[in-house]
Structures are given as structure tokens and as C-alpha cells.
Length: 97
Image (cartoon, rainbow, N blue to C red; front, side, top):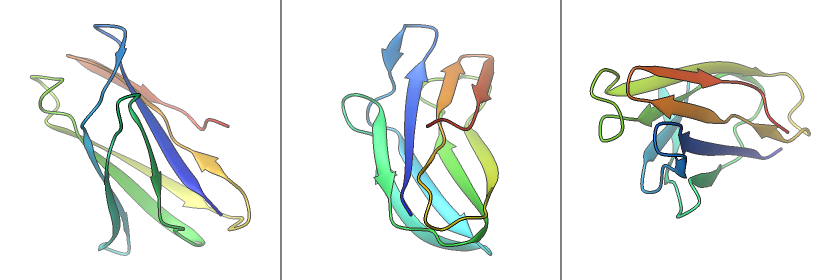
């Protein structure tokens, strides 16, 4: 199983490079990454269950200092991609491929 993310700054149309993102399960930190120049990052294999990704968005958004996305891993063999589109006063996420 692999897990990745891609963060885009929708206000500027550029990747959110240098953003810290933390992967957690059951209140435990499993991994912590910093997005690369393209706003992308890969995490350690999370395994089955409910997980969260917490994005440190304060440098990109004056309103949302962080964004937490909860998701469920049902098939540990499947690749999951959890993108975040961010603007100063809004964000959206979806299950990517």
C-alpha cells in the first residue's frame, strides 16, 4: 500500500512547496513529510483503518492554520492519493488516483 498527497495553492496556481503534512492513526504519529517543489509527498505505509493527514496551511491561508482530512484505508494493497486544493479562505480534497 502506498499513500501520497499533492497540495496546490489555488490562489496563485502554484504547488504548495515546503508544507509539513503529518499522517496519524489512533492518535499516533505514523509519518511526517514536507512537500517537495511540486507540492507532492509520499508517506510510510499506513495499513488498514481510519487515518488523518494534517496539513500545516498557515503560510498559505490566513483563515485556516491547518487542515485535517480523515480517511479510511480498506484495502492495504491499494494506492491512495489524497490531494488538497487550498486558497486563503477555502479548501477542497478528494480521493485521487
